[in-house]
Amino acid sequence: MILDVDTGIDDAMAILYALNRPGIALEAVTVTYGNIDIANATRNTLQILELGGRDDVPVAAGASKPLMKPFSGGAPHVHGTNGLGTVELPAPSRRTAEEHASDLIIRLARANPGQITLCPIAPMTNVALALVKAPELATLLREIVIMGGTIYHAGIGGIPSPIVSANIWNDPEAARIVLRSGARIKLVGLDVTMKTLLTPGMMAAIACGTRAGAAMMEIVRFYLDFYKSVRPDIAGCPLHDPLAVAVAEDPSLVKFEPMQLDVELAGEITRGQLIADRRSGVSPNVDVAMEVDLDRFAPRFVEALRTVGLT
Ligand code: CA
Image (cartoon, rainbow, N blue to C red):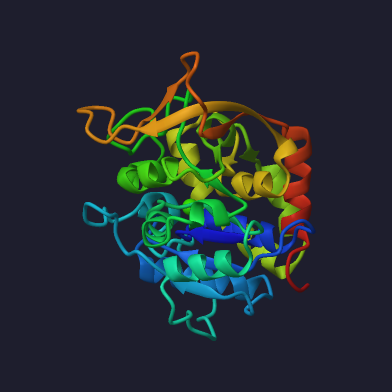
């Protein structure tokens, strides 16, 4: 697996989850802007990998802004001014690879044809750049498992368009390049991720585990407080990015509906919205996760985070 991240509190949890699952070999982490600017996202990624005891995983930085517009400034009210809930982890002991994220994706896919799952849990600028540079990537990758978008879920506050998720909103043009690439694609969006709540009880169980799990739960408090403020009706914070990684490892955690999906680029009030064409005779390009098995995912998440890294 290659994870493409904008670390970010839920990205951090997704990275730790990927490090501690038997079905995932994390080959590299590529970084972009999104929740926070790329400099912070890159430092956070290095810090989280070190926290998880895996500073051997290559990290490459890539796009610092969307294809067609400047960086929006991210979401410090969701992820904290440093992207990790204002918790200060030790400075990373290493730097990123010299290679651009998109070049690393292309190189690893060419070296391992049909074997790499690319899991973008961030705006898809790096993935789009890689597909433009090397269109054959679409068939070289085993599949692309995207965190983003919504079909029926109403969306979350803070984004100008309704029915749009942050990862797609941040770079709709990149999303279109990916959706039209011909790659095998699974989409894990708000329809399922908003059902996967990290509850205070789960947080307490994780915090009793390794140092890494405990530090992660310290970081999550900021994110939980944000969700308490915007969604007082839900008892926890959604595990957006971790669910996408979990589905990449084990697709049986969700039920998919095949759809032909494209993304609106020019709508007055719908820019960034995914449009599903379900008319008969239309061939699907994406398997969209529409139901999730929480009874299996929640304990698996707690166990992975509780035991990640060194005690
Ligand atoms: Ca993310």
